[in-house]
Length: 194
Image (cartoon, rainbow, N blue to C red; front, side):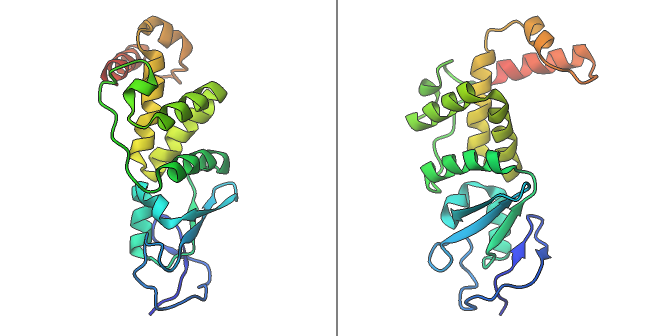
């Protein structure tokens, strides 16, 4: 029997073993023995999170299934400020998957695209507060493979881009040395498909 350890998201054990109850080998995302896990972000910020709430993340679920007794889980691809927002979403949904958003989004109003009105209010607020943070949350949720949150953020961005001429988008987007024609086609395709 092994004891709880700190594991990185690649599944490799790090650091010294932590003493713990050896009778709890198959808890994974179950709250019965280890109700919480400490998530450590790449900036060192630490968050106590209910294991069951993390079930929306494929990355975390896989890591906890490989070693269910892990007490700390580093997320090297997510800053603390970003995880704090992701955690708001996870806490609201309590480990239950919301209904997926239809593609393409039927409306430019988020409240008409989601079943849970809290999601619409939350993502609209995030957009109003900081568009950069919204993109960071989308990237962080993509890193954690929280597909429903990634799609919610992408839908919000897409609803704001609908109807904007590609030329206007092209002038506002940093193409980072990409061929304008290829990027323009990609932006057009992405705006139409969401």
